[in-house]
Image (tube, rainbow, N blue to C red; front, side, top):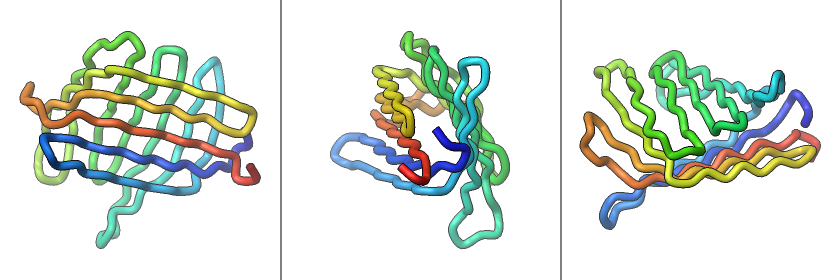
Length: 142
């Protein structure tokens, strides 16, 4: 994989009859060291001068998304289905968030890294939604 990549992130939050979809495609930087692949990019907040620095890490244990800036969180999705408890800090307050990974699929090739995760999300131990996220990283020339 090249250092300069494009990352596509698609997410779905499903609760009852409502589905909320997000999609983001941004240029990013890719690196790999000691068995950990890292993708970093800045996310601009629409209608604001603020941004969020994102670091996505993929290793043999799963996927991690670290957000720093306008919002702060460290979300971990583990292959073994272990629940991860974290704090999600926003300008409007801090929330305790629980992530329980149901399924994670990691696919690698020379110019692509694709990670699909199905998980349950709760806030303060109250179920929020059944979720899916797909992180698709490709070399810019691929």
